[in-house]
Amino acid sequence: MSLAASNRILAILDFFFTHASGSLGDVADALGVSVRTVRNDVKHINDLLGDAGSIEADKGNLRLYVYDREALDRFIQDIWSQELDTDTPEWRQARIFGILAHADKPLTVEAIASRLYVSVSTCRGDLAQLRNDIASYGMSVIGKENLGVRLDGDEMEIRAYLVSVAFDAVYGDYLLPSMIRSVIDRDSRNISTEENVRESLTRYVTVMLDRFAHGHNLGTVSNQVARLAYSPEFAPINTLMDDLGQATGEVYPQRERLFVLLSIIGTRVPGDVNAMGPIELDKEVSSIAHDILAAVRDDLNIEVAFGDVTNEVLMHLKFMLNRLRFGIKLKNPMLEEIRTKYPLEYEMAGIALRIIKEHTLLDASEDERGYLAAYFGVQLERMRKPQDRGLKIAIVANSERITARLIGAQLEKVLDSSDQLSLFTRSEVTANLLGDYDVVLTTTDLPFDCPSPVILVREVFNEREMLERIHQAVALPQKPLAPVAADALNERPILSSLLDEGHFFLFKDPISYRESEDLMVRALVERGELDLDFAERLHKREQDHRMIFSHAVAMPHANQTARDGVALALGIYPHPTKDKADTVRVTFLLGVSEDRTDGRFLVSLYDEIVSLAQDEQRVVALSRAWDWRQALRILQGGQ
Image 1 (cartoon, rainbow, N blue to C red):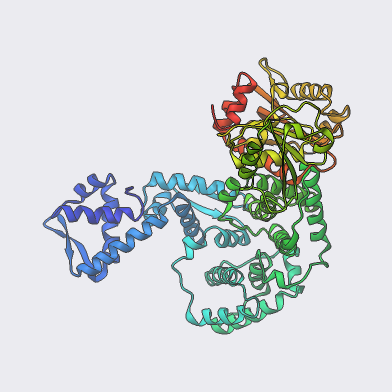
Image 2 (cartoon, rainbow, N blue to C red; image 1 turned 90 degrees about the vertical axis):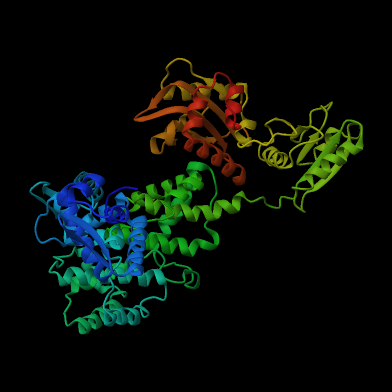
């Protein structure tokens, strides 16, 4: 356990639980701190213990006297619980910000450390990180650490940071007077019935009352904020502020009222959006939403619609734009989980932020990106679910019909009720007959060219893997698929099924990104998988939007007109290459037919590529593959 923060209180008490007495020097040596620190800590502990006990000097030594053992045990438990929650760098940085925001003079780092009960070196590190964090808010910490530092920034920005980042650390144990709580509870119900709106309102009111009471008044607000006084949302806030003024005996100027108004202007979900009906009047929001979906379609060839959450998305965008324009920062507690679990949706949200900036010139944070990714996740999860396709599937056995029946029995476990199975032996089928089926599964080579996609299958196989292969065959009717083995359950079956020796490129010698890309394109053009104009379209697309993911994975892609479906090539760089400022180890080159290849298939394909891009260890291993078989093993989860 660290001997920082409130842990030092526990450490001192623990010393006297195991030692009858000890000098200031003995305690300081045990804790690894100065005698002065121990003296200050003991004084603070005695203030905190109250009637439960005290640490007193006895003939030059300190001794712990216990007056109420149960109260002392409760005190220790409370300190322990607080330490588990608050002994983090982020919490300490927020506390430092609160200390500086409320200080009426510069404070030395030693004075700040003493108030936090941490070492000076720990405080110095936290202060350095705080400087980085508040820079994006237009604030700074100025002065010399040994002489005194102070917070420098606009009052509006200080309040914004207190509300969005430091509120729990600074005001977490602060309780508004009951009369003020009653006013907020009553008037907030006229503003919104949503709990998150009322919670945001309470935060803003708490910060406003605290800052105003201590003389930290807002200066002139921007014209953009001032115009909010004419919005319909201002009236109920005005009533709330009048009622608060009666409760506190203060008269709050309009700029303070506008600050509180920001609490609902930027709230993410302002009510029951599903009951509000379509949002048609906000043309800017509707235009942005339309262009976001168009950009996703153009960049990824996936048709995405928000469907039954369209109204909620439009409302979210409206309030998101308010947050961006008024500098309201929103923390997203789900950010890391969304980024990890929904990497494709996160990339789509990145496209959305690009469109928002083109419309508004506003930059959105990663937290905002995470919320947008969640909306894409709702729709893509539905696309990932198997859908009723009404497939006609022919099963051809060599000579024994029972073999076809066995294959059919396995497939029935994973097919839906709309799919139809027909069983044949090899002697019963012709090209014309099989041409009426969406896909043909056969245990033997057919003696004719089959017009339908063919999968060579063994008698016993993994049903889920086979279902995926069937869906691939329907989406890519001209792409031959390898046999499915009994134990073939691959993590990335689509990538491995699309790649073979002719689509694998190992660039053993150093080569530029553009040169390698053009080499792969030419090879696929010669194979008839890409059209002659593909390279030109690809280069134009990359000028507007390059697709290079984390961990040096590139995914250049464009529409192709050579054939239906997807053309895919894998490029490996043992010597990482460069695309402008980005390093590239692995390239997945995609040509997607303009007929909008099956969306579910594309979502699965992109899922595999984007998930791979997140796995640095696998990317490095793939970049060291010496041939296409080794690459396939890595794609399938091996080494």
